[in-house]
Image (cartoon, rainbow, N blue to C red; front, side):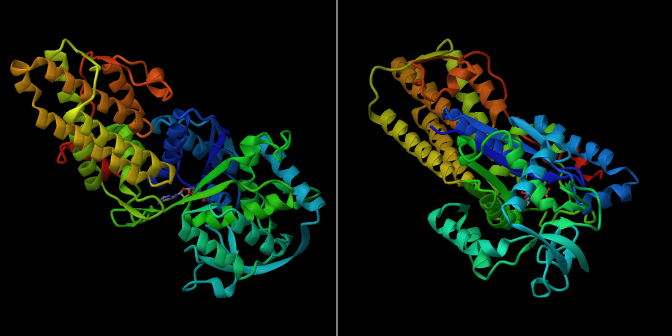
Length: 511
Ligand code: MSP
């Protein structure tokens, strides 16, 4: 199996992280854990994007030096990772020396290979999104990304993007799954087919950035700087990327608004530097908060830390993955969160574990053994669960994360129904052997469901494996067979029901 290299976008440090940022990171982490569980070697990176006019302005507004300003906010993004239970291997800041070296080297490669020239640029500049737009791209006087624009002219270096139209179209054709989902692929194709203008890749109107080699009054365009983080993290320029397995299998997870940068500019830059384009760009939709775009001025910015403190990171990870159909937009609300938490984590899953495990603990001394044969109702039950689990894996592999969870939930319902229909409490006096058989299959199905649920709820999954007397590592090696015996230990409530009128929720209205 070839290794994988999974990246989150690197986050702008102009404000503290919110649920939208937590989402990209959590989706990546779940994807990474899932692949590692299947034995794949995965390198997982995240970090912060710290240069550019927007950051310089935010620092000025706060009356702090940009470096100190970025130090503070970058730390907030870093501190969020353990709170969300993220298993990244590296964290990059674009203000680090290793990154400045990589960007400078990358620029020089592009220059030497004749893809950069000096010219003059005029256009409508969107500060918030650090991008220029032409008159006809503006929407109601704003940039197509929604930011305020003003007209600017500056001397700047250009990247000969116009030369890459055919190369990119060829590349998309030869790699039909380069952009996921299809809708984003279609948007990119029609954007490139309309023709590409050369891209302004340096700025002279501010200084918070990496200087252009040999012309330091220019700083390098923040997107060229930021995209290069993916190379820096893989040891560029010391490591030869052209022959590097990890680089050949890099997947960038991004929000839908930054697909163009990753699927058009980035492969073009890489081709120009004689390096392979990434393997795939996987894009997700946006979270609205209580029905509206999250913004400080509306006061509806959702803080991931509060949710983790109150309900645990597993619950937040579960809700984010389940609620939003991957690729589409979705709505974040406290009521929606509590609804799903109670229905699935507390009732369907938590209750299933506790009723089955405590019954086994009380009535079978905690132990169940694999029966010699699998027949009758048990066979139908196990086959039905297996079919849900197979479907859930296949959906996961196709990035249909919410549907993957839906099928795990079907499997939980099947197990709950089996407990109801088999009535082990009645068999206890009438047919103990039969009771023990049925219970084994129930415990085994819970175990299998939990293994596939692990990437989303790792803390709880570990507790369940502990309750079942199985070491986490053994449970996680999917090559290992399912155990023939389970020895249930003490029972712990996994997800206590949330009382939606609790005073605890006052924390959600205090800022
Ligand atoms: N710095 C650039 C990325 C450079 S990558 C070389 C950037 N940063 S960002 O902080 O604005 O966004 C980072 C990620 O957070 C993006 O994937 C973006 O889609 C995601 N989200 C920010 N707000 C979001 C929501 N409200 N909902 C879902 N994700 C959103 O772009």
